[in-house]
Length: 140
Image (tube, rainbow, N blue to C red):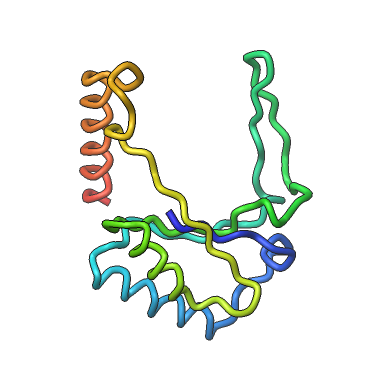
């Protein structure tokens, strides 16, 4: 997963320029042609969101905005590649200007957990869930 950090502009709801949107479209087309893009989207400012925190087993909801823009996410890509180096290569090609930041994080898969944490039955349920999501996505 490639995460895009929020900044003061994204938190203020400033939309990207037409030129940047066109560059991002071309970049996304390259990801699709390479067969690595699974999902991508931008996120509205945190002022339109909420946080749900759990303390003593109870959820507490706090509406945005959230104070520290450098700690927030403004968008993401989910790509499927064979190595961290390949992910870094794709992230290095994101058409952001000065100050842009893309953070790379690997998504956990059932096989990343030992059987005492994710049993074969739980892994099978997860696989069925993913298949159902793909089926639903194909029907849209």
